[in-house]
Length: 515
Image (cartoon, rainbow, N blue to C red):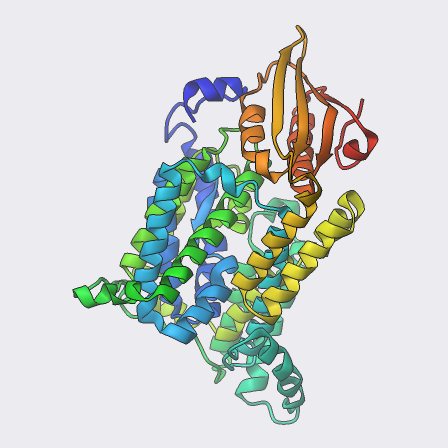
């Protein structure tokens, strides 16, 4: 964001990368402690060695942190891509992941250069949250098997079908590797959840995932338990798999793998930019430059493909920890990547003591938190049956078939919402200066089709006076636009602006303010 746009938003530009060094330094340590178990756990959930996730975390911190358009967002391997990577590696092998990810990074770079970042913000929240809920469910049922020291099966339905057999196969009178691994996984979950409920305020920034993994690791080491532990190379250099010949690019001649690259680029971009929007709601600092963030993610995924690592996105768990820890600039994200690099380079033997079941426990909790029934209830009460049905359909198809099918069907269903207005989808936005306030008058149908332009207008509004949002001339508003306006108004309300909204009661219902 340039100086002019920062001043319009009422946010002063930061003095420099080291202007808040102390707060960024302490925040980076918190983010590092949160990121380490997640980098390894997501790699395992993706069906690749844990060091691949660590490499992605390093690149996401040092490289993407330096280039990012969202100053406080932290990038790295994300649970949202674990399912699609797992299926890809199972069907095509880990060797094909590098070139496909490299192409996905190029696609993100091109999208950012063409200023398409705003389009991803127009994706239906019902589809996005239904997709994330489906991914969360798949992670839970897949990592359930990791907690038994077993490998997940090839599909979500097969994993569900096998769960009763895992439980019935336990023998409490003969504690072997399976029973001990499950005990360590459950211990990790109990410590994580217990700490988050009982921790004192003075230690609120200590992550429960770290304590859970530490408890399981110490117990397994002290009792010398015969359970599977993570396998990391003695040297971090072994985790980098650079191309050695032109044959490395051969997978890109396969149309199916090109489709996979497009899917990874689309999902990674959508998750990143939606996460960036969520991070912007958490602080009053510099706003996200969406196209710059998209280009930074493209560079990151290009490099991850080049070295054979996992794909990355902006990650809300690490980003929220960064904001809560008091970070002020991108330096905290850069430093967290440096801490990961230093830790793995100097203490790889310590990582080899961590039980696989402990990371499975961390991912079970992480996946469960992605399944937000609160969101689908909000969609139903605020917007009616159709958005809730879109959420449910996307969720079910992601679990029962595959992620791409679920997302595409969900996006197709969003068209049903705007079909009654197919002949007049144009949205006109008129801005009027009324002295003490700015009146924003909307005409036509406010749908996701015109949301990119509407977002641009909203972000350019003067920040030194209230806004009167006049909806009297609107014929309709879909749930995607309504959610965008609701969040925008809520954000301004938190900052003390006395905005008002006028118009038809049916359009006002999902919005926080009326007049």
